[in-house]
Image: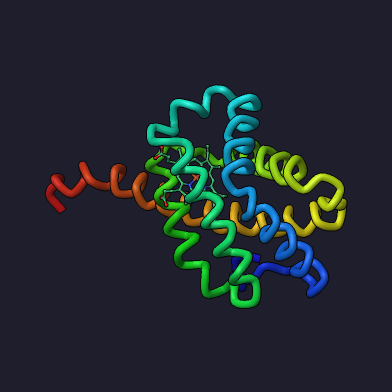
Length: 162
Ligand code: HEM
């Protein structure tokens, strides 16, 4: 999936995701705040990673989701910005295993907002979108981490005579 950079969704799944984001967008503030509340219930240790205003943060998260949904037909063009988002998350102290907890809290918040419209099919389509986002971010984060580790590992040897 990240090799092609495309989100593998059928046209019907795209419709479901678009319909739910447009409803969720109208309740963006509630969805965002429910999401963070659920996230910190699931893992209270994540709370200190967020140092800035949660309301502002939740708007940024919703805006990114909207950007991805608007770009479903050309998701490969979003890869560069999603990868750079993933690299920034390394600096925020985010680890690979946190992505599952965030995914769970996000689906929970969408379910709460959309109620019975969040059908199993809609949930599945969202899972595909989130998994693509998370995989793209994690891959870039792991690469950034690896090159950082290599730099640290090789740095002292540069002082050694060749
Ligand atoms: C996979 C979907 C995710 C998306 C779309 C996303 C989106 C964002 C965005 C747009 C920002 C604003 C700052 C920036 O652009 O660099 C941000 C910041 C942040 N995100 Fe994420 N994020 C995701 C996953 C995660 C995960 C798994 C964690 C783990 C707990 C996390 C924790 C944070 C933290 C700690 C910040 C900085 C908050 C602050 O400045 O107070 N994010 N995220």
